[in-house]
Length: 113
Image (cartoon, rainbow, N blue to C red):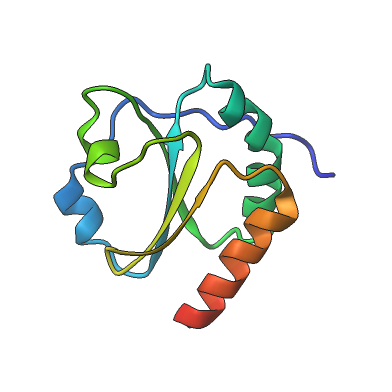
């Protein structure tokens, strides 16, 4: 496995209008640094992202009062939301294996190409 990278959830999320205006593929990852499920999924997500380095990725802190997560109806962490041209095309909730995340990304990105 490649050297482990620690993902940090950013407390400053972009406005939904900015997300909706993005072009191309964008992966949103919702969660919080202290969440056990997020910590458990982190190695799998990092490994999958290393296999798709060109994919834009935002790691966004979620929780009560966080408008962006609420606008995507995020209920469990981590939740990965894949967008294309600002529209949701798929989501993956609480992944546990790198292969699961890689397959999710590979199939969807191939379909968008």
